[in-house]
Amino acid sequence: MSPALALLFDGCRAVLSGDEVGIARLRAAGFVCATAAWQFRLPVLHAYLMTRLPPGERVDYPVFLRELYASDLNARLRELGAEIAIVDNLGKVDLSTYGLIPLTT
Image (cartoon, rainbow, N blue to C red; front, top):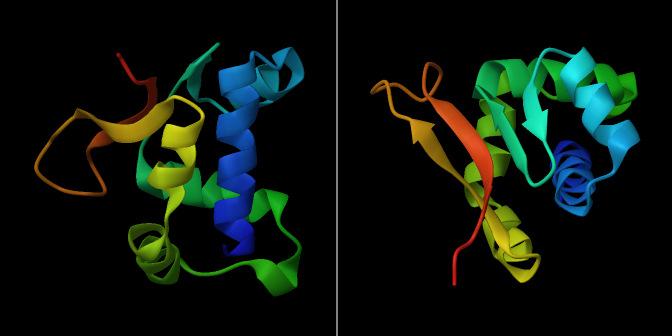
């Protein structure tokens, strides 16, 4: 898993576990975030993740998208009872809102 996706997974895990510090950090960065719920647009998520990585681990947006789409992130999140899904489809990847949402059983 790339450094950016590992950081994203760690953020998702923090949200799912109710980590108040992690949730507060995401809210401070402008995300809609609560315990077990996090909404974002991909360009904003990319920008945020890049600020949290050392310069040598940062990637541009197209590379980030390729890594994201090729990853097993949702499979890993499903093991934690959640997934990332589109919550507001505006017809374009960059404009749509995505969210970390709990799975219903």
